[in-house]
Length: 261
Image (tube, rainbow, N blue to C red):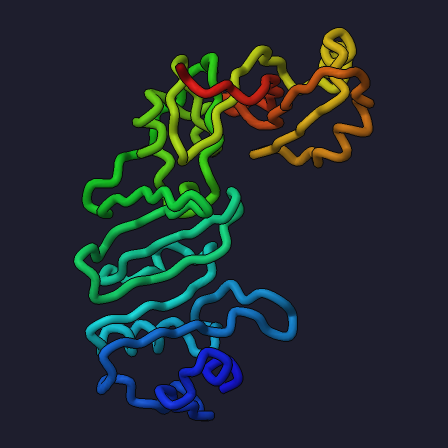
């Protein structure tokens, strides 16, 4: 009510306090549902434990011409109904929201939307690409945006940059060529070494690296723990990726790639 009054819309809005699961929504032109996804113990991961449950929300959506359901970005993909267009939204690389759209002209599809730029990658489920092949680490490493990963559109990004995966379970894409894409951040890789803290420390000391960014995917080592062990010193910068390459724990060292000419 307070928001409606602040926007001067109080005369256009009716506020009801009731159990929404007991409300017949079929007479409305559009339905928007934002289920409670937190309980007394924190986040709720089971969609049927939402309040109201996802099954009720989907039923209400299917009964209306148009509908939008907010869901947790980590929702299991098998819980997404075939009638929905699913969209994952990130802001500055961090996944913030996920929405199921009903009544659109793009059902059974996945979309990754990146803010603040607004780039949007969309693919129908029927034409989604299979997982990229694993290939040797090339000159460039691409880190897909979180929304792209959640939407299972890493293969589409890999195709755009002519790349493959460093490991079948890791969402890092590698390529020998540099491509401009809003859907992933590109890094130029200068070194690849098996996981070895002493070797990394010696390499960083030799190159006078004092500004160290540590990223991890598929590694149990915490970035701050590694930073304390290698004690970076110097005026140069580097990025270290703690990951797996073809199943082997590996360190990839590099720096953000310059924009392609």
